[in-house]
Length: 118
Image (cartoon, rainbow, N blue to C red; front, side, top):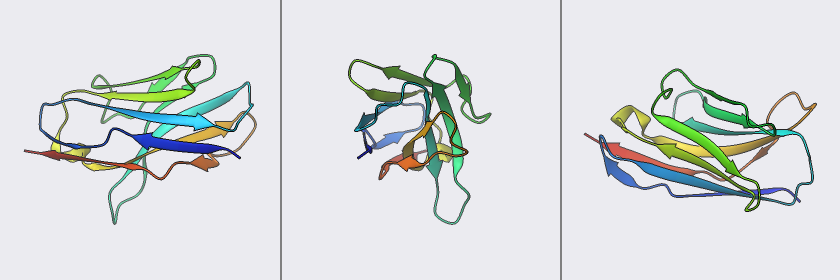
C-alpha cells in the first residue's frame, strides 16, 4: 500500500523559509514522478514543483527561483525548500506520486498547512 506523509508546515513571516518533507512508502516503481501541489479553499489546486526518477525538475511560474524540489532516494523522502515566502504562498501543500505510464498523479498525502503572514 502506497503511503505519502507530509510534514514541515508552519506559520512564518513573509521573507522566511520552510522545508517540507514527504515520506513515501509502499511503492516499488523504478520510474515515476513526484510532485508538490498546493491548494487554497475555494481555488483550484496548483502544481508547485515536480521531480522525476531521473532527477529532472520543473516549477510553477509563481515559485520558480524561490522553491527547490529534491529527493533523497535512500530515505525515500521528497523535500520542498521554500525561500522568500510570500503571503500568497499560504496554502495546504500536498505531495503526490505518479508511476510512469499513469495519466495523472494517483497517490496523495494528507497535506501540511503553510501560512505566511505579512
